[in-house]
Figure 1 (cartoon, rainbow, N blue to C red):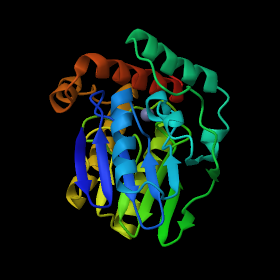
Figure 2 (cartoon, rainbow, N blue to C red):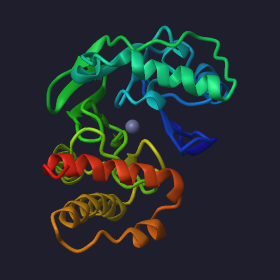
Figure 3 (cartoon, protein in one colour):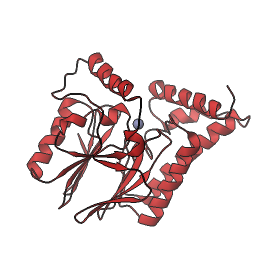
Figure 4 (cartoon, rainbow, N blue to C red):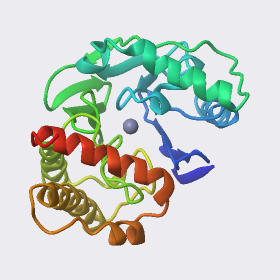
Length: 272
Ligand SMILES: [Zn+2]
């Protein structure tokens, strides 16, 4: 379904995990970000795009390598692919692809395109790196923490800040890579907010927002989660798990991610 739409932007929301796919139309290009999950959802994106601007150069950006975010890669064979350097250097791509195959097998899903790991045409290795396409400026920052290969992108002059799996209003931080890196990435998000004043924040899961106060709240909640969890493991007050499940809606599946966060943080603290 469509969560948010303007003449230059469409944010689609999958029925699964409220994962977003973003399409941005400028005079110079079409940018598609993380098209996902189900074949008919990806078809809708392609149909809308072809109706709107059939001949504009197409770019496909992956915010990170989690399988749900790269699942639609080959549905856009003519697109130029943008990803972080760390994304292109992964050595576990087979296991990421296996997760897609397992998912499709589990739910009897056939796709009209092959499943492969994305090959990048534009590799983003720097900070505040700019990809200029006509009058459209894509500004990138490395965003490690959730995974090691995340990217933030700000699309100018539209002021759209695409955050990948950060700054969600429906998920607490899922930390697969490193909690300190995650905190540094939150600092970076705050810097981007204050310096560039984005007009719209698009998270990988959940709701977009144009409200700066809401963006700040999401950064605050993410920081608090990591801080309180770490402190509790270091002998501070016990983590307020009950409150966590008042704030977030799906305790059964999210409980696993919370547990995995605890395991990772313990390891970082040398506690296991
Ligand atoms: Zn992710």
